[in-house]
Image: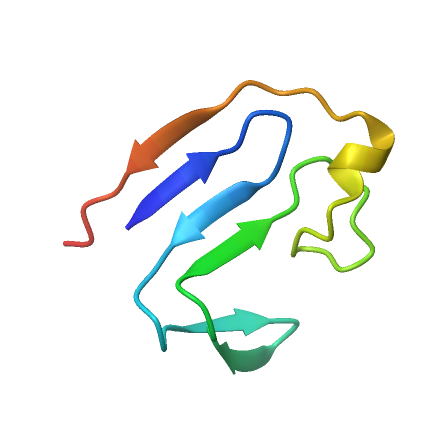
Length: 70
């Protein structure tokens, strides 16, 4: 699994399509292979990103983490 910290944007998690996750106690299935999580704190759809980082001028460095799912 890979987590990308988008410069001035969200955390993007790359997962296999069809992966399941919990959101607000409800199990959901990913329709796409990416899940974007808010890190600016302004999303109206937390914990998911809704693009608010652009509106508020969020600034943050980018980066990448590779996780070994052992």
